[in-house]
Amino acid sequence: MKRIIIIDSNAIIHRAYHALPKLTDKSGEMANAIYGFLLFFLKAVNEFSPQYVAAAFDFPAPTFRKEKYPLYKAHREKAPDELYNQIPKVKKILKDFGVQVFEKKGFEADDVIGTICAKSSEQGVESVVLTGDMDALQLVDEKTKVYALKRGVKDAILYSEKEVEEKYGGLKPNQLSDFKSLRGDPSDNIPGVPGIGEKTAIKIIKKFGSLDKVYELIEETEGPIKEKLLKSKDEAYLSEMLAEIERNVPINFVLKNCEWKGYNKKEGLEELERYGFYSIIKRIKKENKFEKDNNLKLF
Image 1 (cartoon, helix red, strand yellow):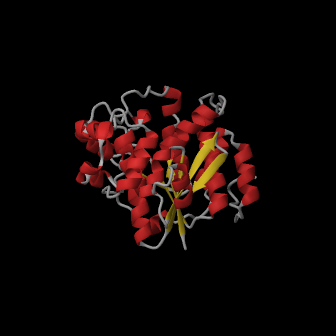
Image 2: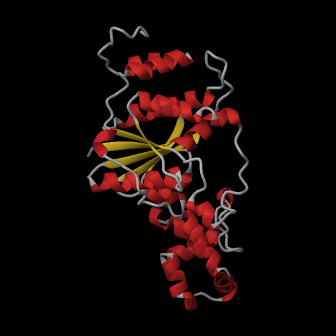
Image 3: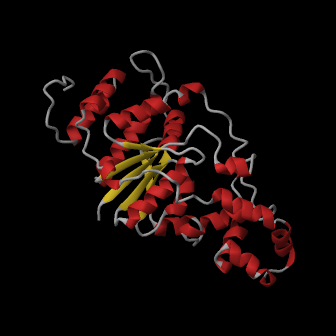
């Protein structure tokens, strides 16, 4: 089966920025997030040998979730400018290496990723999502896996359906938005149902299968749990909407345009040299075969 790597770019950039010490490029500007992003990207490409690669980014504007619920992600502190300044630089490096970059106004990178996974699956292509965010686990199925950073930018776990079920007490990946509809998600300020914790939420969803079934068969629930569910029904359905990844974002995705042709791109290698990433250049040379460009004097 052919494979596409889909990069949750903002999540990895944020992880790399906070995981690595300060590192500046030749001009003295911060470049630690760029460097860490590239380390993880190289690791994944070497490990999964994809035929296609795509990168998803958050669009810098309010999403449909924020418009529906203004408190969505309201508790998150704004990242420093030296992190945000590295995002367009990562985009340029990816484009210089021929990687298609996707983003869509009104949607998050997760939604773009979910859409690419769906479109790739329709064409018989396996997806591997590179991320630092567990939200992507709901996308896992027989044709989609998630390669999530565990610590730093080198230690990662590959999640298939089995690993997701083990992590969430037997819940299937497609039940995770139902789980969050009850449990909520403090990191994204998703309210859930007040008074229902993780264990109870897992137990309820395992019993009924989905949020719709919980309320369809609400009379099978008794006591305080029933009261909490009835009192916060609107909050539960709002939370499900906030937590569920959209898989039908209107993007111009053409699989063939995402074909991965390797690192032998003059513009990309010159960009790495400009940043002074000589260790990455040497690693690329060691791990990949090149037809050396006579006009490129990096090696």
